[in-house]
Length: 587
Image 1 (cartoon, rainbow, N blue to C red):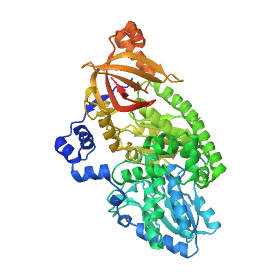
Image 2: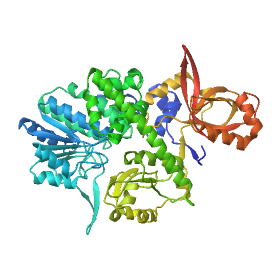
Image 3: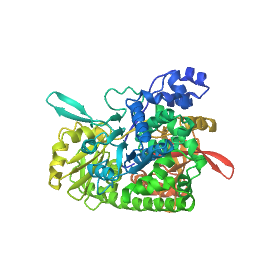
Image 4: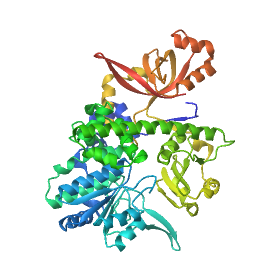
């Protein structure tokens, strides 16, 4: 709330009333769909009612059929297969999909994941050497591998078969003839971003790519498709946790996966939901992104991903024990993150002026949480952020960007300063010698193309909707738009003037505001605000004075009023249903 924001009312045009009549929906719901880029009957129908029948044929993904053939060949040849996974949620679940599928197809496979601190991201030559010495002759990567040039070269020299399944951007390099894509010399590559891949929706997570290969493998083995359907709950968790757009095929995966999680047979997932006090029948993408996903991530951050894999295979009391351990690890991660984020924010506040790109040295920070800390700082200051921690031989960094600045491209221009780097336009990881930090800060801030307006977050309002228009029926319609997440945000409405008739601070940490608000038409409604309560209090004092502030908290006549952006929801308490607002932004 302290940060300046620019509220923009989305004004996309469309046949609101014609489509509303066609789909028997409220015109406001149609406006929401059009705001999300859905303007035709076909696109709206798939968005609202897409099913498994709308999934794309996995054979359309370049390399997927050949990968399945080679995996089957390795299985029938009795080869030991190494699954080289990553240590985050997507890596864990893509690895588990391949492991379970290969075992069901009669294969002998094991998952290898690098140690985040000791080895860093992705399969490496040492892992390959160790696997070879253990008798593995085929390596399948998942959620990594597209940049593993050294590891793949090592594997091929040893005579191993190498199959890459990945979803990250391919590496681009500058040569005398211009820019070109560089790919590892694997036997087969499955990555929807590789040149020549015509897959209709390339924005799958690593687990989604692995799932597509498994679908073909099962068909080759004569296994019914229903046997692979159980992996959709894994794909759903990985898709949300890896912050993929919840559009097109991803939306089908997540919606189907959430339904399946409600009655999952995986005892480890059952135990984790119990420990986290989640109702399996009421799961949403929020619970994956902010409760379950972080628990799986904490294993790879503060321990090893092996603990997460064990949970997915555990039964009974062992599952309960491992679930408790993962939750405890995540609780520890939360506290470490809070402390590190406070230190990073303090560092920024002590700078004379803010660079366009904030390059923050945080030597004592646990390197596994640097990316989360960078995200927290970005949220507060709305600048691209790279947080560097002390690694074994230099600095290790993790960055998070904003719309308008491609972090991957920015790092490409400084690649001579970096030992390793990789990532996306919005996020990246890197390492470099300690003495290069100041030079990186200087060079990465040259010609960024960012302006003062770039650092003002844009809040996109779906509609200026008066309170009197809201009904339970309309809110129920909004549920058709779920699951919400990246690429499919929760609807946001606003009115210019709300009078604050009463305010109370709730919660054991005094971090929730309950308000009674009134709009210009005299309509009153309860509202909740989960933002910065202290900042709200300061703003009221600053704008309206001490007397109005006190009167507001006591429910007496006052002059406090704000513009509010909100989402309406139904509050159920002791059998009674009331409509309330959840406030997201105050101006």
